[in-house]
Image 1 (tube, one colour):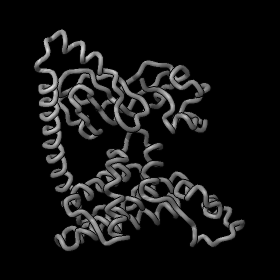
Image 2 (cartoon, helix red, strand yellow; image 1 turned 60 degrees about the vertical axis):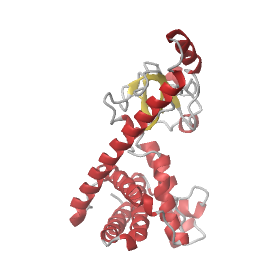
Image 3 (tube, helix red, strand yellow; image 1 turned 120 degrees about the vertical axis):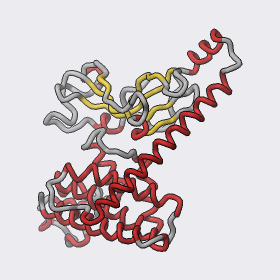
Length: 316
């Protein structure tokens, strides 16, 4: 691990220990807990990127910073101490591209952590009701990154027990929340369609089956709704399979137009019949990615095509 990555790893560990201390000291210091947790997550995300190459944490438009990060600092007009780097959300976005489908939280789930950190830092404000959720989001992100980096010590230290307990509590709360979502979706379905005959209900459901899911989705595939058994859509990100002969979908969300059920990635794995497993689309990469030109995205030697990163392909 290079010096930049090591420095960020140790800094993340320090901020995380301070966050645990503040969290343990009671409600009056919860603002410090979420702030320090946000910094810890940002620094470990950057440690991972810097481990790959120091230039990956640099603000792309700052040429002096890029010169320092690529070992060409002698040509820079500003000292390295003034280097500009990306923030928490951008660091997450870059890591998510590299760890295709392996980040445990979506960008939408990460945003409250960034908002809480920035709120405390810039306006001395945070939402007390979101402290536990924000804190455990940080733990989940860090827990995914640590195995991807060379071990530099016991990251969690004396707070390992508290770490485990908080994650256990979060899993229980997430399961309860999921059951609430499923119950609400079933009620919506009953209210909408119970008065239809079976034939008419089938016609209506067929008509709405292709309603697009809201928000950004790179690609989606039809899937049976776990709440109402209608056709829903499993959306996510695609990549070329390691063998290079097919495209696989990593599910990130599920949406059902019939009952309005919306599930995030973690919830997909909590279902009785999980929907979080990778799907082989059984499509040759050259057919799925028209501009791929035979390259093996993220598994070959070529650079990823811009369209593959921006999601301008696939879908219905």
